Image (cartoon, rainbow, N blue to C red; front, side, top):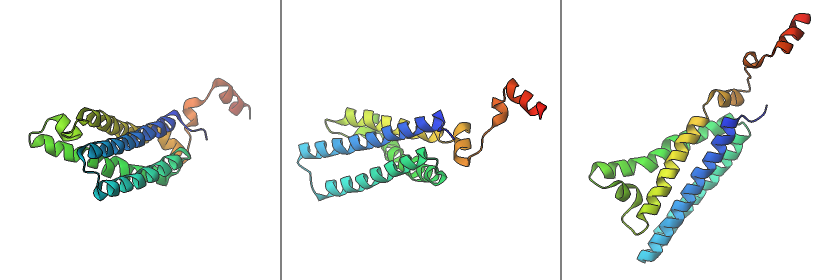
Length: 162
């Protein structure tokens, strides 16, 4: 079965989400270095994020290949838990009076860059998650095809002739 457009787009957009996460990590290291606070806790955070990005990449590759378990894992780990970790802290900060830049970008000189990358990251996760569950994606992951929608007059004539 050919890979449907929705799944191709989902894998591409998941790749964008991972790239946004990598960029966020790079910005965090740059900011910490600029503030003179580049200690072990920063590197531990980078190591954890690297593990998450490698796992996400493996799941994306398996999603492309049609593995239902990869779609489920991406949904649970990144669409639910990951998205909550991206949105909840910022939403709580905004509820307590911070601006969107402070809440999602921080107070440093890279606040606007963090905000832009974080919003891109959130939009990519939401978009990819939705694309994984379109009708064509569902057929791809279950291995079924709806041939009735694609029946041509020539196919119908062939069936009648038998």
